[in-house]
Amino acid sequence: LLSRVGRRRASRAPRAPNLTKSSASTHTGEQRFQMRLFPWLQAALCCSVAPGALAFGLHAKRSLTPKRGAALAAPRMLGAATQTSEPLKAEEVKQESAGVGVLLLNLGGPERSEDVEPFLYNLFADPDIIRLPNSISWLQQPLATFVSKRRAPKSRAAYDSIGGGSPLGYWTRRQAEALEDELLVQAERASPALRRLLTEKPAKCYIAMRYWYPFTDEALAEMAADGISQVVVFPLYPQFSVSTSGSSLRALQKLFYSDPDTWGPPAVQHTVVPFWYQRPGYIRSMQRIVQEEINKYSDEQRKEGVHVLFSAHGVPKSYVEAGDPYEAQIERCVELISEGLPADVPVHLSFQSRVGPIEWLRPYTDDKLKELGEQGVKNLVAVPISFVSEHIETLEEMDMEYREVAEEAGIQGWRRAPALNTDKDFVTDMAAAVIEALSAPAVSIAEACAANNVELEEKPLQERYQVQDSDQHHDDGFGGPGVEVFMPPSAWNSGGMNKEIYTRRTKNLSIGPDGRDEDEGPFFARIWKPKILTARLTEAGVLGGILAEILQTKGSVLHLFGL
Image 1 (spheres, rainbow, N blue to C red):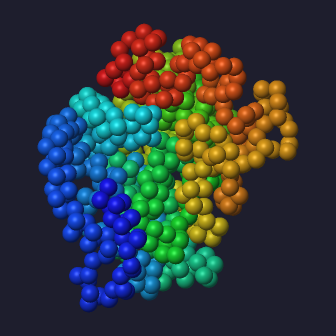
Image 2: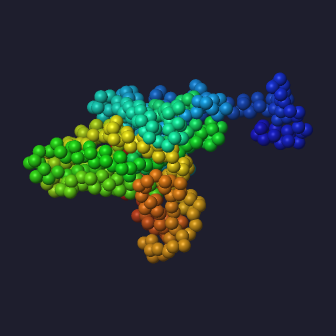
Image 3: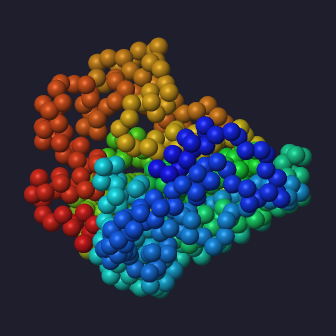
């Protein structure tokens, strides 16, 4: 209020003369107006507001603050103003120190037992993991606190079973070191301009974890201090999902927008490699490690038959229905890898790590293992398809939990293909992808997010992508013409991309998750039909899923969190 009144009063007053550095004590009209005329009003406001604010603050501290580690971790994850140092501004970076930085995005994981609860808090405080409607988004942190406290003992026991912490950070650091070395090697074979760029000051890799140290803001502060002028954003997820690459890119974009002087185009150019599941080098690496496991079976076991099960991390089905390309990319990735495997080895796909009764992508890995056992499968190679580093979901969930399920189902010849980690062919292909990204037209964070439907809230497609009705009429499954939405052209330059993954065809500009037109019939006649109501509630996020669970009376709502 004081600022608005002061600005209005100052705008009517004569302008003050230009100030110099020696006249720093001279105040603007707005400042003089506030200091001379309103000190009594400021004091009155403070006296009237302070008691209530203090009471509310004490109550909020008691009810919302997580454990000490989480209280420190969450603000740093979001890039809050709790940092001890401000990122360097563009004018503070010397031009002669400019270089190339490769920003590796990953999930992160607790490295000690005491880190588990704050790590879970950061995970569940992410709106891309637990999606709440805007009207109740203020419940995000209290809900994250509750869920992290309830899940911490079980998760801590899982981490203790693999040594007390996640090795994800260790392997990501090793990947960064190997990538830096390989970039120097490949720079010698690059074009003269690119060779000069990568050799005069060798490219440096930075790690930005989403839910544990080092967080994205720490990586950006390090890049600013090093004077990086070109950034290749490289998510360590082969396939794109809103809950993995999308979440990390949204956090990065928020930090870029908060400091345009440092990270805007005049100071820094960036490009994104949004996914790379289709790259020939990655496919060959996966084919090789699977083939090596198949070769370990005896001749007798090969006669019995060997099957391969690709197990990918699951996501809620509603994400895919809202436009997440993850499922389509996983399926295509499995097809490409399978083309290089023996013809007599059947291949299967399943999804793991689901939580609660909300429907996730099927088939679930534990159900698939039981099904294969019932079919008489005796020898099976389990392959982690959406992970490139060993961590809790390969070392504990696959190696312990799923192996036990498989053996109980009669699958005695169980093998698990290792994650790629620092596989030489894999690192070589990563370096090639970075060099290609530097050579091709840039793909901005905004382009990568828009192309992969990162924003999952129901918005008309025209509003989200600025598209117009397609002139080409086609059968869209609803008996009428449709709208085509394509990926921005600048993202087509990397070879091997599958354009069909990015084509969306719908009859209207807004389609519900249940496949019905938003315009079809009166609102109340549609929303209160059980199937549509359940779809709408589930789409709303975890709280919507809780309401759907209550309405369907399918057991305790705590199952949503695996409690």
